[in-house]
Length: 90
Length: 285
Image (cartoon, rainbow over all chains, first blue to last red; front, side, top):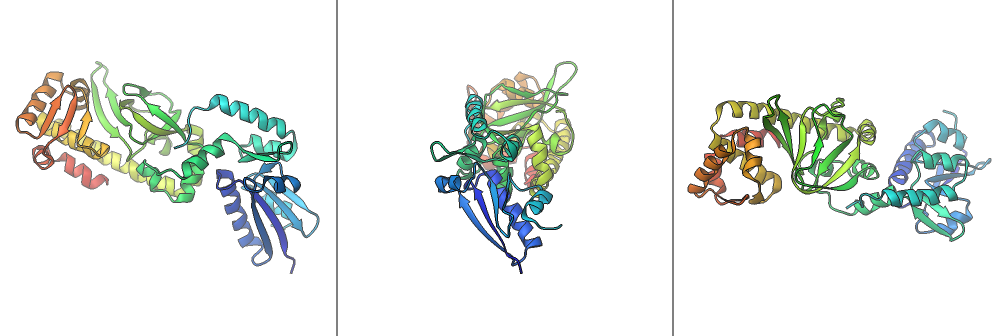
């Protein structure tokens, strides 16, 4: 079973960050039950790390594996776009 | 409380945000309002956009408006980015009848009157909005324009949201829809009762009811209202207000001096009221 490894960069409990977390959780529950690993990083706490990872705005979702790596920015409300970026067929 | 009126500040910060974010998906997300913070490689720091900063600041503050307080936390937080804190001044007109509603308001301690203006310029108050409600309920019911004159009666603070953001928020929040529909029904009950009251009840009893409703709304036995305001509220001449108020004072139910009203005997005032106060209070809460 392929495990999708992701990192979501957010800004504390700011509105788009809250939406992004909720949207991503719904997607994982429906399309990747038990088959994902998600790390959430608050850029307000770790800005340098986020910059080192190539993050410019938040929310920012990085797919680390399986390859190819991918990224998507915004509040993740466009489900088709997110699924496409994660390489998941709808 | 969210910081208000930072239009110049927003332009400056957004100017910087746009300089940091030059192209591609990041720029598109920024322009779509889907970004909370921007990172600056030169300084190694993160900068919150103004809307996100306001939302975070407000998230810790107690929610005064009852409609907003009744929402699930998640739904309230999703509104915060679009809510702006404003101060409403007594005498300020927020909407005229027939005007498109550009903003909705959720009062904190401000008090707002809804008035019908007749062709012969007579004015009648047909509703009151305080922390228990919102101004602009028409938008929640898919109407576009105000049917009444909306006049600030007691200065204070409120949270304001523009019409487009409000429509969008309604679309995504079922709890918000439910709260506002419930509120709309309460206003309908109040309006019907007011119609019967205006037609049949005596001025002194109506004044007593109205003072009790105000007391509930402002949560204090003391408030300030001129005879003129009360005359417009009750749809009578000023001298009628003076007579009715004097009668209530003589019975030691209220004191009323230079516009300062103090309720001295709430039970007595309730007994002197026309009964509509209790009907509205029981049905609408």
